[in-house]
Image (cartoon, rainbow, N blue to C red; front, side):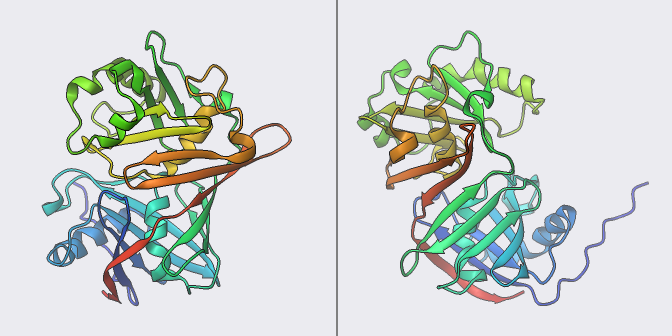
Length: 315
Protein backbone atom coordinates (compact mmCIF):
# COMPACT_ATOMS: atom_id res chain seq x y z
CA UNK A 1 0.00 0.00 0.00
CA UNK A 2 1.35 3.42 -0.96
CA UNK A 3 1.42 6.05 1.76
CA UNK A 4 -0.43 9.26 0.84
CA UNK A 5 1.81 12.08 -0.30
CA UNK A 6 2.04 14.91 2.23
CA UNK A 7 2.83 18.40 1.01
CA UNK A 8 4.65 20.73 3.34
CA UNK A 9 3.12 24.13 3.98
CA UNK A 10 4.80 26.90 1.98
CA UNK A 11 5.17 30.01 4.15
CA UNK A 12 5.72 33.30 2.33
CA UNK A 13 4.53 32.13 -1.10
CA UNK A 14 2.97 34.70 -3.43
CA UNK A 15 1.21 34.24 -6.76
CA UNK A 16 0.51 36.42 -9.77
CA UNK A 17 -1.18 35.42 -13.01
CA UNK A 18 0.14 36.98 -16.20
CA UNK A 19 -0.46 36.71 -19.93
CA UNK A 20 2.25 37.24 -22.52
CA UNK A 21 0.88 38.92 -25.63
CA UNK A 22 0.58 36.25 -28.30
CA UNK A 23 0.50 33.39 -25.79
CA UNK A 24 -2.44 30.95 -25.84
CA UNK A 25 -3.35 31.65 -22.22
CA UNK A 26 -2.29 32.90 -18.78
CA UNK A 27 0.52 31.57 -16.62
CA UNK A 28 0.46 31.44 -12.83
CA UNK A 29 3.74 32.44 -11.21
CA UNK A 30 4.35 31.20 -7.66
CA UNK A 31 7.24 32.94 -5.91
CA UNK A 32 8.43 30.78 -3.01
CA UNK A 33 11.23 31.08 -0.41
CA UNK A 34 12.57 27.60 -1.28
CA UNK A 35 11.91 25.69 -4.48
CA UNK A 36 9.75 22.60 -3.79
CA UNK A 37 10.43 19.22 -5.33
CA UNK A 38 8.63 18.43 -8.60
CA UNK A 39 6.15 16.22 -6.70
CA UNK A 40 5.46 18.96 -4.16
CA UNK A 41 4.90 21.48 -6.97
CA UNK A 42 2.19 19.24 -8.39
CA UNK A 43 0.55 18.82 -5.00
CA UNK A 44 0.60 22.56 -4.36
CA UNK A 45 -1.12 23.14 -7.68
CA UNK A 46 -3.80 20.66 -6.68
CA UNK A 47 -4.35 22.73 -3.56
CA UNK A 48 -4.18 26.23 -5.04
CA UNK A 49 -5.72 25.87 -8.48
CA UNK A 50 -9.44 25.64 -7.51
CA UNK A 51 -9.39 29.04 -5.77
CA UNK A 52 -7.36 30.76 -8.47
CA UNK A 53 -9.45 29.47 -11.37
CA UNK A 54 -12.48 31.27 -9.93
CA UNK A 55 -10.68 34.47 -10.93
CA UNK A 56 -8.89 33.28 -14.08
CA UNK A 57 -8.06 29.86 -15.48
CA UNK A 58 -4.48 29.07 -16.45
CA UNK A 59 -2.76 26.08 -18.00
CA UNK A 60 0.87 26.73 -17.06
CA UNK A 61 2.57 27.37 -13.75
CA UNK A 62 6.04 28.52 -12.81
CA UNK A 63 7.52 28.05 -9.32
CA UNK A 64 10.36 30.51 -8.72
CA UNK A 65 12.78 30.90 -5.80
CA UNK A 66 15.47 33.52 -5.26
CA UNK A 67 19.00 32.16 -4.72
CA UNK A 68 21.03 35.38 -4.90
CA UNK A 69 20.10 38.95 -5.81
CA UNK A 70 18.91 38.83 -9.42
CA UNK A 71 19.33 35.05 -9.66
CA UNK A 72 16.45 32.59 -9.50
CA UNK A 73 15.79 28.89 -9.92
CA UNK A 74 12.50 27.50 -11.17
CA UNK A 75 10.31 24.56 -12.05
CA UNK A 76 7.77 24.79 -14.86
CA UNK A 77 4.59 22.73 -15.01
CA UNK A 78 1.91 22.43 -17.67
CA UNK A 79 -1.61 21.22 -16.99
CA UNK A 80 -2.82 18.53 -19.34
CA UNK A 81 -6.17 16.82 -19.15
CA UNK A 82 -9.24 18.09 -17.29
CA UNK A 83 -8.08 21.26 -15.55
CA UNK A 84 -11.02 21.26 -13.15
CA UNK A 85 -9.48 18.42 -11.17
CA UNK A 86 -5.85 19.16 -12.03
CA UNK A 87 -5.64 15.66 -13.51
CA UNK A 88 -2.56 15.01 -15.61
CA UNK A 89 -0.41 17.81 -14.29
CA UNK A 90 2.94 17.38 -16.02
CA UNK A 91 6.38 18.83 -15.57
CA UNK A 92 7.27 20.22 -19.00
CA UNK A 93 10.40 22.11 -18.08
CA UNK A 94 11.83 22.69 -21.54
CA UNK A 95 9.17 25.13 -22.70
CA UNK A 96 9.33 27.82 -20.04
CA UNK A 97 10.53 30.97 -21.80
CA UNK A 98 7.08 32.51 -22.21
CA UNK A 99 6.30 31.74 -18.59
CA UNK A 100 9.54 33.32 -17.46
CA UNK A 101 8.65 36.52 -19.30
CA UNK A 102 5.28 36.53 -17.57
CA UNK A 103 7.04 35.87 -14.25
CA UNK A 104 9.56 38.67 -14.60
CA UNK A 105 7.44 41.49 -13.09
CA UNK A 106 6.54 39.23 -10.17
CA UNK A 107 10.06 38.26 -9.15
CA UNK A 108 12.46 41.07 -10.07
CA UNK A 109 12.75 44.83 -10.00
CA UNK A 110 12.10 46.56 -13.36
CA UNK A 111 15.65 47.84 -13.82
CA UNK A 112 17.46 44.66 -12.76
CA UNK A 113 18.76 42.01 -15.11
CA UNK A 114 17.54 38.63 -13.96
CA UNK A 115 18.92 35.12 -14.46
CA UNK A 116 16.57 32.17 -14.18
CA UNK A 117 17.77 28.54 -14.21
CA UNK A 118 15.35 25.70 -14.84
CA UNK A 119 16.53 23.04 -12.39
CA UNK A 120 14.91 20.22 -14.36
CA UNK A 121 16.38 21.00 -17.77
CA UNK A 122 19.46 23.17 -17.19
CA UNK A 123 18.08 25.90 -19.45
CA UNK A 124 19.40 29.32 -18.36
CA UNK A 125 17.42 32.46 -19.18
CA UNK A 126 18.65 36.01 -18.75
CA UNK A 127 16.08 38.80 -18.94
CA UNK A 128 16.84 42.49 -19.38
CA UNK A 129 14.10 45.14 -19.39
CA UNK A 130 13.74 46.89 -22.75
CA UNK A 131 10.59 48.92 -22.06
CA UNK A 132 7.94 49.62 -19.48
CA UNK A 133 6.46 46.10 -19.64
CA UNK A 134 8.83 44.16 -21.90
CA UNK A 135 12.10 42.30 -21.51
CA UNK A 136 14.70 40.97 -23.89
CA UNK A 137 15.69 37.37 -23.26
CA UNK A 138 18.92 35.46 -23.78
CA UNK A 139 18.38 31.70 -23.85
CA UNK A 140 21.41 29.55 -23.00
CA UNK A 141 20.91 25.80 -23.49
CA UNK A 142 22.58 23.45 -21.00
CA UNK A 143 25.08 22.48 -23.70
CA UNK A 144 26.08 24.01 -27.08
CA UNK A 145 23.72 23.15 -29.93
CA UNK A 146 25.43 21.69 -33.00
CA UNK A 147 22.75 22.07 -35.71
CA UNK A 148 23.68 18.94 -37.65
CA UNK A 149 23.61 16.84 -34.45
CA UNK A 150 20.09 17.76 -33.30
CA UNK A 151 18.28 16.54 -36.41
CA UNK A 152 16.05 13.51 -35.79
CA UNK A 153 15.55 10.75 -38.39
CA UNK A 154 12.26 10.87 -40.36
CA UNK A 155 12.87 8.74 -43.46
CA UNK A 156 10.15 8.80 -46.11
CA UNK A 157 8.57 12.06 -44.91
CA UNK A 158 8.95 14.69 -47.66
CA UNK A 159 8.96 18.31 -46.60
CA UNK A 160 9.54 17.33 -42.97
CA UNK A 161 12.40 18.25 -40.67
CA UNK A 162 12.50 16.98 -37.08
CA UNK A 163 14.95 18.23 -34.48
CA UNK A 164 15.43 18.55 -30.75
CA UNK A 165 16.87 21.75 -29.37
CA UNK A 166 14.66 22.05 -26.28
CA UNK A 167 11.37 20.30 -26.91
CA UNK A 168 11.48 17.95 -29.90
CA UNK A 169 9.71 19.47 -32.90
CA UNK A 170 8.46 18.18 -36.22
CA UNK A 171 8.43 20.95 -38.83
CA UNK A 172 6.39 20.74 -42.03
CA UNK A 173 7.01 22.84 -45.13
CA UNK A 174 3.76 24.73 -45.85
CA UNK A 175 4.18 24.04 -49.57
CA UNK A 176 3.51 20.34 -48.88
CA UNK A 177 -0.07 21.22 -47.91
CA UNK A 178 -0.56 24.00 -50.46
CA UNK A 179 -0.23 26.95 -48.09
CA UNK A 180 1.48 30.25 -48.83
CA UNK A 181 3.06 32.29 -46.05
CA UNK A 182 0.09 34.67 -45.93
CA UNK A 183 -2.44 31.82 -45.90
CA UNK A 184 -0.52 30.14 -43.08
CA UNK A 185 -0.68 33.30 -40.98
CA UNK A 186 -4.45 33.53 -41.42
CA UNK A 187 -5.15 30.11 -39.88
CA UNK A 188 -7.04 30.28 -36.60
CA UNK A 189 -8.89 28.03 -34.16
CA UNK A 190 -8.71 24.21 -34.26
CA UNK A 191 -6.12 22.78 -36.65
CA UNK A 192 -7.64 20.85 -39.58
CA UNK A 193 -6.82 17.15 -39.06
CA UNK A 194 -6.43 16.75 -42.82
CA UNK A 195 -3.81 19.47 -42.93
CA UNK A 196 -1.92 17.79 -40.09
CA UNK A 197 -2.04 14.31 -41.66
CA UNK A 198 1.46 14.64 -43.25
CA UNK A 199 2.89 14.82 -39.71
CA UNK A 200 1.65 11.36 -38.71
CA UNK A 201 4.53 9.16 -39.85
CA UNK A 202 7.23 11.57 -38.67
CA UNK A 203 5.59 11.97 -35.25
CA UNK A 204 5.58 8.19 -34.76
CA UNK A 205 9.22 7.99 -35.87
CA UNK A 206 10.30 10.70 -33.42
CA UNK A 207 8.33 9.18 -30.54
CA UNK A 208 9.92 5.78 -31.16
CA UNK A 209 13.40 7.26 -31.58
CA UNK A 210 13.19 9.25 -28.32
CA UNK A 211 11.14 6.71 -26.37
CA UNK A 212 8.23 9.13 -25.91
CA UNK A 213 4.80 7.84 -24.90
CA UNK A 214 2.29 7.80 -27.76
CA UNK A 215 -0.27 9.78 -25.75
CA UNK A 216 2.19 12.57 -24.91
CA UNK A 217 2.01 16.06 -26.39
CA UNK A 218 5.51 15.59 -27.80
CA UNK A 219 6.88 16.11 -30.33
CA UNK A 220 5.53 19.60 -30.92
CA UNK A 221 4.17 20.36 -34.39
CA UNK A 222 4.83 23.42 -36.55
CA UNK A 223 4.24 24.52 -40.13
CA UNK A 224 6.67 26.99 -41.70
CA UNK A 225 6.82 28.87 -45.00
CA UNK A 226 9.70 30.89 -46.50
CA UNK A 227 8.72 34.54 -46.90
CA UNK A 228 11.87 36.19 -48.17
CA UNK A 229 15.61 35.98 -47.44
CA UNK A 230 16.09 34.81 -43.84
CA UNK A 231 12.35 35.23 -43.16
CA UNK A 232 9.91 32.46 -42.16
CA UNK A 233 6.19 32.54 -41.48
CA UNK A 234 5.82 30.08 -38.61
CA UNK A 235 2.85 28.50 -36.81
CA UNK A 236 2.82 25.95 -34.05
CA UNK A 237 -0.04 23.71 -32.94
CA UNK A 238 -0.91 23.92 -29.24
CA UNK A 239 -3.40 21.40 -27.81
CA UNK A 240 -4.90 20.87 -31.26
CA UNK A 241 -5.27 24.58 -32.05
CA UNK A 242 -3.16 27.08 -33.93
CA UNK A 243 -1.01 28.99 -31.46
CA UNK A 244 -1.85 32.70 -31.77
CA UNK A 245 1.78 33.72 -31.45
CA UNK A 246 4.97 31.73 -31.12
CA UNK A 247 6.44 29.79 -28.18
CA UNK A 248 9.84 31.33 -27.73
CA UNK A 249 11.64 28.01 -27.42
CA UNK A 250 10.07 27.21 -30.81
CA UNK A 251 11.82 30.31 -32.10
CA UNK A 252 15.20 28.84 -31.11
CA UNK A 253 14.20 25.62 -32.88
CA UNK A 254 13.32 27.44 -36.10
CA UNK A 255 16.60 29.34 -36.13
CA UNK A 256 18.53 26.11 -35.59
CA UNK A 257 16.57 24.46 -38.42
CA UNK A 258 17.86 27.05 -40.90
CA UNK A 259 21.44 26.04 -40.03
CA UNK A 260 21.00 22.29 -40.57
CA UNK A 261 22.62 21.02 -43.80
CA UNK A 262 20.01 20.27 -46.50
CA UNK A 263 17.35 22.15 -44.52
CA UNK A 264 14.19 22.92 -46.53
CA UNK A 265 14.58 26.49 -45.26
CA UNK A 266 18.28 27.45 -45.50
CA UNK A 267 19.23 30.74 -43.88
CA UNK A 268 22.64 31.80 -45.20
CA UNK A 269 22.49 35.19 -43.49
CA UNK A 270 20.89 34.08 -40.24
CA UNK A 271 24.19 33.59 -38.41
CA UNK A 272 25.10 37.24 -39.06
CA UNK A 273 21.74 39.01 -39.00
CA UNK A 274 19.29 36.67 -37.26
CA UNK A 275 16.03 35.11 -38.43
CA UNK A 276 12.84 37.11 -38.82
CA UNK A 277 9.82 35.07 -37.78
CA UNK A 278 6.33 36.17 -38.84
CA UNK A 279 3.33 35.26 -36.66
CA UNK A 280 -0.23 36.57 -36.31
CA UNK A 281 0.86 38.28 -33.07
CA UNK A 282 3.63 40.18 -34.86
CA UNK A 283 7.16 39.64 -36.09
CA UNK A 284 10.21 38.90 -33.98
CA UNK A 285 13.88 38.61 -34.92
CA UNK A 286 15.78 35.79 -33.26
CA UNK A 287 19.58 35.94 -33.14
CA UNK A 288 22.24 33.47 -32.06
CA UNK A 289 25.83 33.32 -30.92
CA UNK A 290 28.14 30.46 -31.91
CA UNK A 291 31.41 29.15 -30.53
CA UNK A 292 34.53 28.40 -32.56
CA UNK A 293 33.20 24.97 -33.49
CA UNK A 294 30.04 26.44 -34.99
CA UNK A 295 27.77 25.26 -32.19
CA UNK A 296 25.07 27.65 -30.99
CA UNK A 297 25.69 28.67 -27.38
CA UNK A 298 22.91 31.23 -26.90
CA UNK A 299 19.84 32.74 -28.56
CA UNK A 300 18.57 36.31 -28.31
CA UNK A 301 14.81 36.90 -28.35
CA UNK A 302 12.94 40.21 -28.00
CA UNK A 303 10.13 39.42 -25.59
CA UNK A 304 6.51 40.42 -25.97
CA UNK A 305 4.51 42.67 -23.69
CA UNK A 306 3.18 41.15 -20.48
CA UNK A 307 -0.33 41.80 -19.17
CA UNK A 308 -0.87 41.36 -15.42
CA UNK A 309 -4.17 39.49 -14.99
CA UNK A 310 -3.96 39.02 -11.21
CA UNK A 311 -1.49 41.17 -9.23
CA UNK A 312 0.92 39.42 -6.89
CA UNK A 313 -0.66 38.39 -3.59
CA UNK A 314 0.08 36.00 -0.74
CA UNK A 315 -1.15 32.41 -0.88
